[in-house]
Image (cartoon, rainbow, N blue to C red; front, side):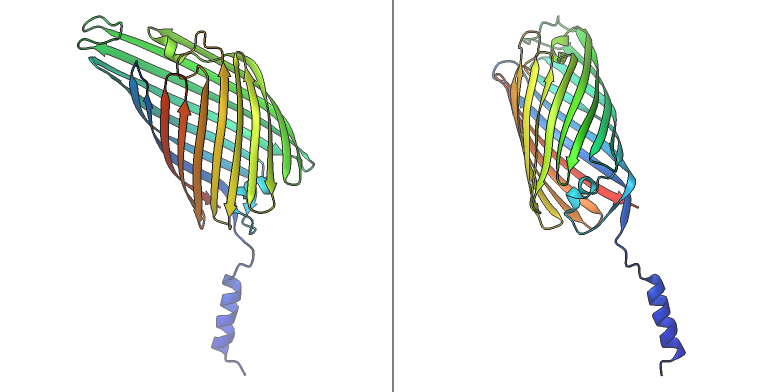
Length: 301
């Protein structure tokens, strides 16, 4: 016959045990990025930045045994996302002390209905401030010991709707971009502005392959992109990205005058924490950029 102590111990174990898998209400992602840009005839830059992204899941995300990086999407959890970030770029110009700083805020909502349809909306704001002071001979058109400065502001808004069928979805959206710049040297801030749109598709093929791609249009700017991904077990994910932008060179800086971008990222989950690393490269007719990003994300209940 079991003793009273054995019965008490068993009862406590049953009360303490939680057979249901954990449910998470929020995902927080913190990243740090280092970039370099080289040009054959003008100037090189070195940049660093960081960002914090917080995603609030309006329906809890269940750790249901699916690959962790796909759980939010597979469970169609409506999500509100907020983002804040900033960075600095240093210009390597002989005889000139020049730098540029940027700050950005953003918010987005994806709401999945109980049916196949879903809605998405987003808004992001960006501010850029730059200055240059000539301290010696240089190629910049800055008088000795004189300074120039520039500043710019950007707004990008999007509204979209999509249809989801099991593990495949198609999305169509409208875009509004508005960028303004003031001061000397504002040509480096030029961006396409006006109304545009985009189309995208996303799918999960079996258990181990994900695929995303699409096209985006803004006045004088068209971008095509594709992102294949490989899911290894529940915790490890590898994703590549390739994109090409076609732009009208008139009025745009070398950073936006048509470019090809490629990236490779790796993520690994350790319980409720994900470690991320990513490498990106961008090539234009006159410049090459490289970037490395490290990040950590965690889910909380």
